[in-house]
Length: 352
Image (cartoon, rainbow, N blue to C red; front, side):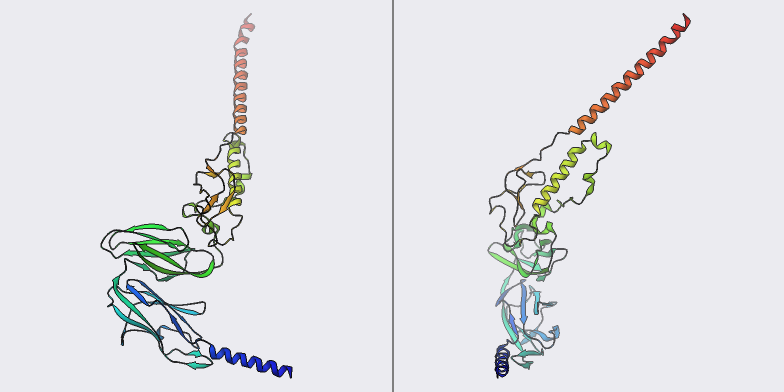
């Protein structure tokens, strides 16, 4: 009796779940500028994979084309992306999925699904490409082309991070790099000029990021840790006369600093505050934190203290080395002086 009840309950919930299972759904903006990036998300339980042969575009009732576009499958959903050509006629358009087989509730369906959008009679200030990108060597590589007939200064960056600026003459194209961070998620990279903002969508599924990409600012990527270099622990005779102790102490200081900087490498970058928000200083490459206490910041390593020039320790071993050289030199002068003096006196004594 108990088994029959559980079976009926499971069948009931399964039936309810299948009846409410969503069919194909298209999500995109309702309107776009000419030259702006178009990104549409197509979600659903497809029986056969979605392909470009299932994707159609219409202007009103007339089929049209937007040129080359990308179709990517990410985390079970499909993403259609491209840049709207600047020569496109403003008006009402639609994206339609035709001939695709998918589940609608507990039934297979091939019904067409469409989504309307509008292209306005206005051109964006720039073309940002690609519309959707993934990281290459832990960076998103994007390009910006100025569409205005004058020089413009564009502010850009990922939402919630420190921004940068780029200047572009009319028609000029420049490449920009945006650091990718660990995590399986979509993010927007914005480009702003005046009161207008454009977006490029980026997606990262990186499971591990180098420490320098996680925590260091863009001008600090050359500060790679040398703590694995064992040469700092080995000494040679000539190190005594070249201030070898200074070099060794500097290497040890760099190792200690790098250890204190990297003590929380797996902390989420997005959850951190910037150094300015924490009222902390950012030391340049020629400075160090006088307390030796570094705090992870969203934009860089923050100094919980004051940034000062590195102190040069006295080279005691180098001084001792030079003293030894001086002593040896004096001994040689004394030895040869008395030896030759004695040799000059000997013939006189033999004549007598």
